[in-house]
Image (cartoon, rainbow, N blue to C red; front, side):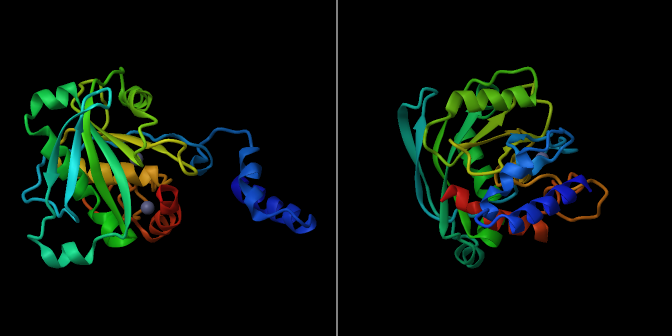
Length: 270
Ligand SMILES: [Zn+2]
Ligand SMILES: [Zn+2]
């Protein structure tokens, strides 16, 4: 109710003052000084996604939309190698049909615990992102390209602190997205991300827990949703959407309202 009344009063002011454009709307909303979850108006850290009930790996290779030579970076950002991931045409019809024309760049990093657990961590995290971006290629014409993989030493006593640590460690490297993968026992969620209200000034950050490549890909899609500004759908609402905890690990699409929001906000990453 409060939100609606603020909006209406803005419309009224806007109509009475010639020259006040709709571009000033965020100023109005920023001025209402209460803190009970008007998520869209300020950048904030999401509530952590609950963990999945099980550990689940992908049973087949995810589609890779284009050949990419991915840099391997050390923690300071120095290149120590490279790997080529070939476009996967095993499922050629859907792969060709669903490649997004907007390419966004990703720097994927695995923390020490994750790297200790998996000697093939580079392939795993690239596979997770290639699975996570199926939704964005298919429904939003956006293709996530992993341009670099690297090492990270995560620190923090909970998920939110570990996300802040990622942001402090890797901002300003010039990628659209920096995506962390963790097996740190202090990470007490399935995933967590910044929910932006406009184009982030640097990269967009999220962290996903190791829950097997299949579950982690679902979490990663959800967390990328936050990076595009999406809030959660209420649990028990019946809204079938990745942003509803009831469906995060089972469906691979956003509901109509959230689809529209992604389509508007994808301009942030052009
Ligand atoms: Zn969430
Ligand atoms: Zn939704």
